[in-house]
Image (cartoon, rainbow, N blue to C red; front, side, top):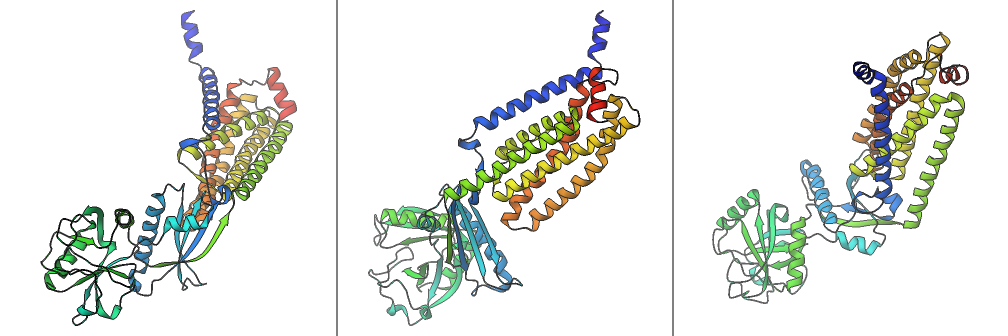
Length: 462
């Protein structure tokens, strides 16, 4: 008896049924997780068009940048703005650069999308005028033309101009800018000209340290002017050859203004000047309407498809619907884990992938019908139906995945959102149609001679 019981438990049907139960339990846990994590860190990430927010377009001035360095400068600009926006806790901001014109010969633009920020002034303030820090040498003969409130006597003491803008003809570029900084820090002056006053210490990276050493070594006794966003804020006299890559900026700082400058410098100085060109605000109400419309369309479409599958294919239709529900739950959980930023285009891609999952189940059912028509028993028809349908499903879905990869690689942000969700959905739907549906049908133990088998043959697929 024990031997017979052991033999029975090792039959494939035993494992199929336990596998089906495991799939059902896992899908139930996935559904519970998706339902209970609507807020907090596991909440769905919604894009600008669904959650509302602000769309900003900046013009990037690349006229003073060598043409060979424009591309790298724009990449650096994008990285700087991303760090700056992320520092304010904006959820899933989108920052990208593009060039206008039919042939890509127009002006360069920086596009910033801030989901959840519907106040344009707040959004612009958050991005702010990230400081462009420059170090320039004062030309001979122009030293006395600088209006400075204090006597400058060392490389670490600075003054401030009486006007926000200085005569650029009095200065020569050194190539040393805030782009070569490694960090900035707030300190309080320990020399007689800035004793106890807030100062800003800047540490240059390896490239900046070498350049700073070359500048100070070759220009001892000259003034090194420091510009912030084109305004002269200090002009210390170079007293020594500085090799440690450290400069101190002092002047009329308050503790708060010095702290703000440090923060902005650490977020990154802009390698390319930008000016705000246009703004667009998408209200939360409009975003909710788009989200509700997308979800409603998906639910209605799913129920129509489910009704068709059940009425036309009976038992395989019921199994296909169950497989589709599990597929949807898996996708929703993946959206939370990756996480995927859902946009209206992304929801459209998800709905389209559901349609492809339905198509796979229909192919399987039709192949099963052909096997039944040839006189095959139910279990054999199920296995052969899946086997024959697999090649068509595989080839079809691979072409869709390739298309999604191409769209994601070359598309704009809107297209990328669609391509990511669509490609992920096609891959998961292919696995669910072949594995979950097959496991459920075989686990039911359908035999031609059983009542269920006769119903399947004569009413479902015959």
